[in-house]
Image 1 (cartoon, rainbow, N blue to C red):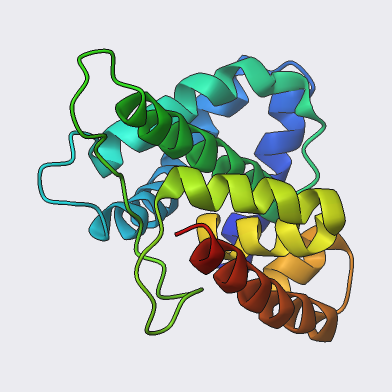
Image 2: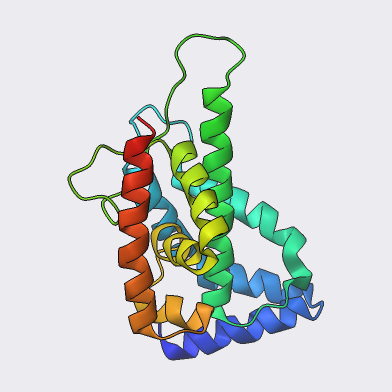
Length: 190
């Protein structure tokens, strides 16, 4: 996005947080394409019969965002970080609901394209990944946040560093260590 759009988004987020409902109406067209692109990237790794489409995922995020008006938005990166968390929750909830389906039978797994995290590894179940991220968060919340922002949020190293208020080198170091830790955790669960 151009820097003027970045400033527009930040200004609209501040206006919306201040109670201006019209700011949300102006904000949505500016961020919709980016949110849909990120949602499509998540959904590309899903099985063909998956019922959730990128547009539906973005719409669900929007419905949850409407309740977040008084969030205290800092900037564009903070907004997309929150959207990443919401997408993660939505996808994880869906994976869990399929796993615990009352009709019985073999649980269906919702997988996610994890090429950003796992090279040459079997793709983990999203619910397992979420549980591993929770364990990582208990040990080192910043490393968990780095994974969430980069993997689920699609944020760059620079954007992640800005959100977490650390250096880009720290983000890269945390990213590498978190990938190794998650790979070990997920492979030991099998």
